[in-house]
Image (cartoon, rainbow, N blue to C red; front, side, top):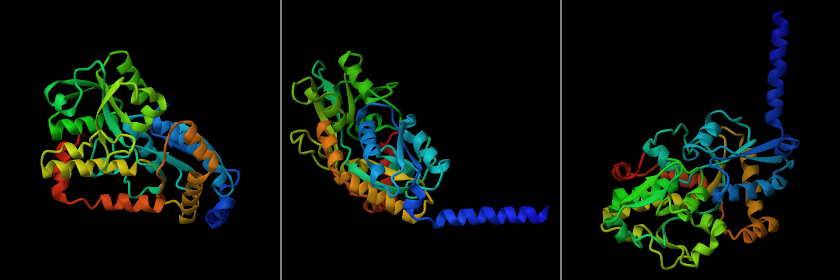
Length: 337
């Protein structure tokens, strides 16, 4: 009996060793790679993820099948926690979460059960610059107005940037944005503005350009502020939140928080994944960003890109963890968690 057990253990160990000795092409051939989106259907996160999922498989050695699945909840934390702790650590799972994951982890935001620098970052489609806007029917037309008058905004999950950024402005600049929570996606949040349920919404520029492009030109909305380190070329007349800072301290706090926009729409795989598979996924992502069919889809969907490699992303996430204790303390006060 003991010999049988030992023999079985040796066979099992041999199989494991053989699996790890496989080349990425051998490993991925015939496999299915799952791409988990930490948000609901609709909106820019879902659209970008489905476009990546439609093209990246042919660039991964072995050409695995890629299946895309939405796992919304808690501002993407449910999906990220799943990938970090429970998904197979073999490179068969990709994920997309909120760009503020690193900041949420550092601040100890409720629901965070992951370490962003232990995730293996695969690549970024582009920065994700949000903005806050009001309906043309609202009396609030600027951040100055929002400091005087209460403004209701439709919000999604507590960990979503659609909810976080307006509350940061409340805490740093003294605006009076009131979040009306419970909307599952930004598309639902924008419908709430159309129906007059709320005064406005905060979401990614790309989400509005994809779902409501006319709003950007026909005067249906007034954009109050954009949440990035610099103004988008498409919105040259809209000030960034950082530009609205009244003191150096406010500027430092807002810069630290808005740096999340640089992480943007980024994809990662599980911790402890074999280095050659991580490299294969990163190179497949890079190739996807240059794929004419992918870039053609971007054009057709009126969406843009600003790719960043997985290596650059990994460094950015690690560097973010080096924020000084003094600045972190100030950010902690400003950031909703």
